[in-house]
Length: 118
Image (cartoon, rainbow, N blue to C red; front, top):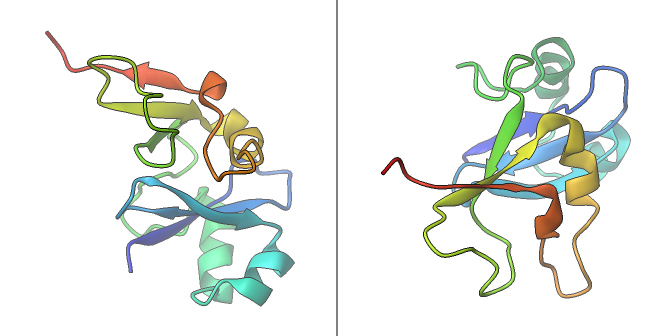
């Protein structure tokens, strides 16, 4: 499956389904919205996200992880030369998800581009 449910903020009813296959959010919304429309929604997964920051058993995207990697979903040509991937601050994850344009691409102003060590 390769999906983790991330809760960006402890105090907000908003969740992000992150795919490790494409290294990007694939679905987001309130718990009720995801329970109604996400086929792998299960109460235990949301309970872990509420407690730990994500549904992951191995610790990825828990509360101590303040940045989330995003590789896919950018408009062709959006990657700066030499960039390997982008990261978005956990605190900006909702705004990032909701910034998808009418063609389905992310808004790159909310990311930090990451480069390999020289």
